Amino acid sequence: MTSVITGDIINSRNVGPQLWIPKLKSVLNKYGVEPTQWEIYRGDSFQLEVQPDEALLACLLIKATIKTIKEIDVKLAIGIGEKSYVSEKITASNGSAFINSGECFEGLKKSILAVKSPNAEFDTKMNLLFDLAQLTINRWTQKSSEIVKISIENPNLTQKDLAKLVNKTQSTISESLKISGYEEVMGMENYYRNQIAKLC
Image 1: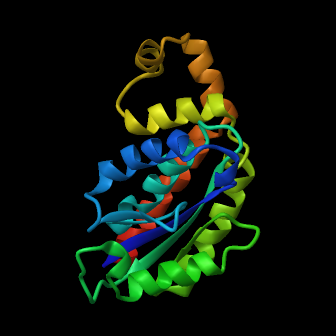
Image 2: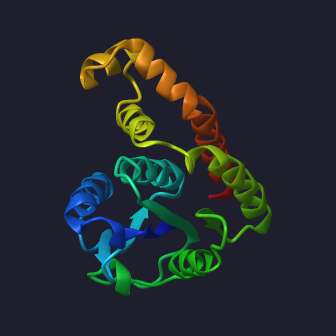
């Protein structure tokens, strides 16, 4: 089992690519190498292959990273399944994970984060949670996105340590994480991991 994230930058024409491409690449590089595990194509679309249990965290990190830039956001579809054809480029590889990711992406309407796996019950449950989470994560500000990003990247640091890292007060960190619903969002991420363990 593998998972493929298909993404697309929303309103990418509103800002110069030099603002968001390096930031997106820095996140994608954490998960693999270009172009076998990730690739940016068609200007503002991208694909990333990750382990299924890592997929939601990767999406949240991509989301937080992109939302540190004003005016843009990101649509993300997680496809879970098999990889039956391996190519030098991820965009030319194939299998049910890729098909599910593509179909899930095409099916995104109001929602900008969804998952499609071989298990319909899992999808229904998780997509309901994703829809609820989007009431919060789609409203992340630039400031809160920066704090969420640094918190995801440094899960073992205390708020005090995070404050030192970004040169802010601990109360600023605490307030940003509270406003962004960080604890609840990470609770959802943990639940997703538990469900994936049963699925795979």
